[in-house]
Length: 437
Image 1 (tube, rainbow, N blue to C red):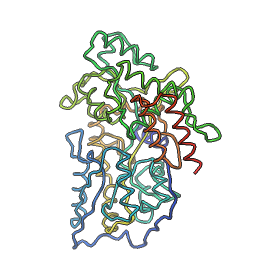
Image 2 (image 1 turned 180 degrees about the vertical axis):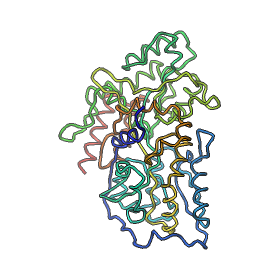
Image 3 (image 1 turned 30 degrees about the horizontal axis):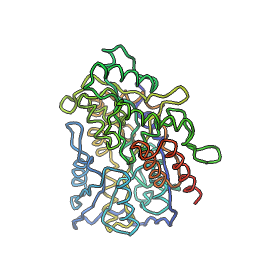
Image 4 (image 1 turned 90 degrees about the vertical axis):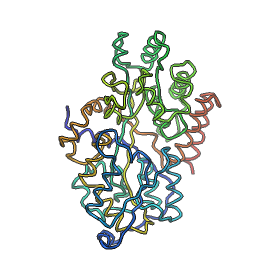
């Protein structure tokens, strides 16, 4: 197996950054990095979704690791978790309300990769260069660059992802199939197996109108040979390849290849069908490789594989990428304490805690040589098989708006509100107008 830090580098290089709404940027304060007064109790509120309370192993959940480490180093600081929506659009909107109104409700928040330029231009993240000057000693610079704006480090990375295809090795072996190279192959395999075992679902994926749909659509789109924009920067997602890709997404639902409920499913709802042993294929991020062999959590333990997404002959296998970092609200009333907490999150102890609870998808250099991390993640080598397929979501200086457009129009096609071609034509018209502003 290749040295795992190389794994992190490849994933990080391909992650997407997007932006919108230019505004002034806050300047770092010279004395803010001083430790908080050890005699005065301080509450630092951290905003992230419920998964910060979740561990997929017997090790503590990341929020517990953070709280324990903070308590040891800063007994006067209490870390509270403000749970935000799982849906990235709703989460981003909540952050926008807090920060644009200079609300100090949250002190630290999780920043998604497509928000970096938007938040950087708007001044919605406190620059960390002077507050945490030793970050580059422990993190791969390319990972820090992912969450940087105009040379300013805006976040401490803690998680990354890439999409791929999970499949039932036992079922494919039983029916004499190799893993599918194309979506046509996938359709043939599903049709054969479900004809003999109609109680099984063929292919599950999240189709709800949220950010995950953009990632899934991007994988189909590039897998059918599409390109987001032409050389002039004009939207081309309504090209023949684009129409074929979305047409296939619709056909999977109408033909029964995928469940009728797909347009209402998020990633958790989709994976539940696969993990319960009721589906042949699942499109999902790589992170569940860490617990699919746990019989207490998975009914497919020992009977699954992970591979790059299929692609049609004119396309390329594609795994959409993503990632998160913790950033500081520039309008916090507890800047010194927030910096102390973020420094703890940047420590090897906490980064290792994420790796033990969620799997090795962090960017802390040397972390994967740790014996406990290696023992807890025996399937990490499977992630290497999808690295060459890593690709970003559509680049845009107004990514949030672009994502909303794609979600709305693709979902309209999936639900039959609009014909596929009409939905994609409307999407391109709206995207081109957005970029002309």
